[in-house]
Length: 123
Image 1 (cartoon, rainbow, N blue to C red):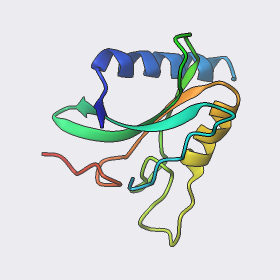
Image 2: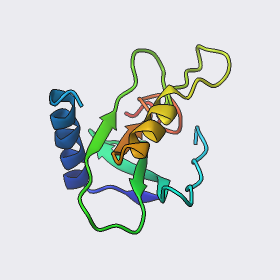
Image 3: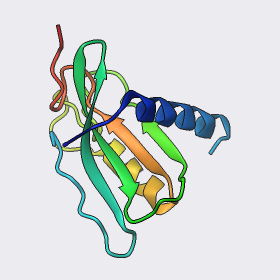
């Protein structure tokens, strides 16, 4: 598991904000597709004394800058993949969205909300 530096998280948030303005394990990782070269990497980042577990979907083998999006789950105890303990079965809305974004060349970061997935409640 990789720990993301705060700078990368900040850049991702800024990039996601710009993309939105332009209109443009609790789960398991998606395998890299040989045709796309994209992988889901488990990462963590600190937020107010809590370690947040996340998935960074990115292209492999490239040093080029890519657009990125920060995927934020809606209300309730929703994990990084878009699943909730309040709903029976797997929905995987955010995991699916990350796949669609990568099909269009956009990297993404999605994270477990507090108390969901692998992220705890904190202090």
